[in-house]
Image 1 (tube, rainbow, N blue to C red):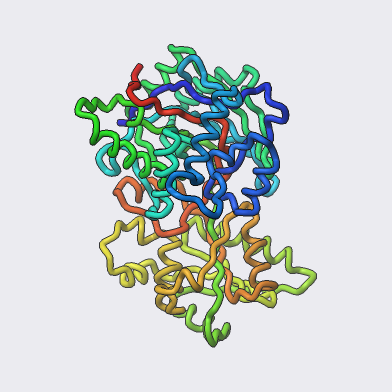
Image 2: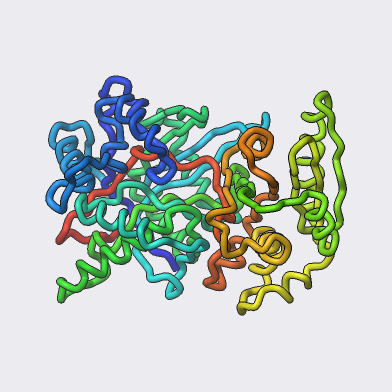
Length: 448
């Protein structure tokens, strides 16, 4: 079971001028150009802590991590950031619109007692990379803080936790912000002890599935182990044995998962006709003919038919340029079983990303070992439009449209301690960074 706790969060001083301009997306989706823009947007923009700039001449005594730590301490000292006086759980709602439909996602941020992967009830679903983990570890070492929350999922089938959260949403939110994608972010505090205890009690029997933030979670585990080595009286209650985590329920109707579409380039001697013939061995193919006048209608039909086919089968949208659109549907799932040599769970073999990789990228195109050089990925609410443009205007040769990974697939695979293939999920929208952070005080302990 997971153990969660309220904490004395650090929040921006609401008296700041233009306080809405201090927040950012998560550090790992900020481009260098966007980093510059956030630096210029507000004197106290959170990017200066989460993703400080690198400069020529940086060394172990003067670098971006040390500057982040100095910025954090300076802003606390000058009351740009304020630490709450009472432990709280933070209610967090996001409202957004996708394809004309309005959504609302509700969750909460608290501390989670760290658990080693596979030994408790915290389950990852993605592979991690050592360089990204080391980056976040260095930031934790310098700042001694949880800068951004981990995004996780849990089951609240009867809505008991959300019922408690909603009681506090009638009050004026601490922050009410719209980001550049017009997503509305609202934050409230729950500092009532009975309400906190009820949430903690409800969460005791839950499992947590990490949706976003795997690198930060693993960095926190290593940070804890480093400090634990120097503590002969380790009790698990130490502040450094906890991490700031956002929870939203699997049943939440605002839990939007978008596909990560693929575009292929740098194929030598690529022949679209021969490629279609190769696909016919494994897929049923339906062509969608379009002219300049009907292209938008055809794209909408392809998207609609792809979604419908994906409810019962494994289907992909295919675009080869020059208004040649196709819906391809896998004929037999056993095809993939024969191609996957590793011992993998059935749920893993049945993922669309697995099928695309083994059947198309490996067997037909022969690029499985060249994916970093041949395959690019797009993830946004308008990813379909993006991949069409990449083929028509940027020299890419093939675009594949995917259906989103289902939440049941994520849970089924993570529960077996298996990782999903690369670029399988894109949870939208991202959490807003800077709403609340957690400072780790060495020597202090966490408990109710």
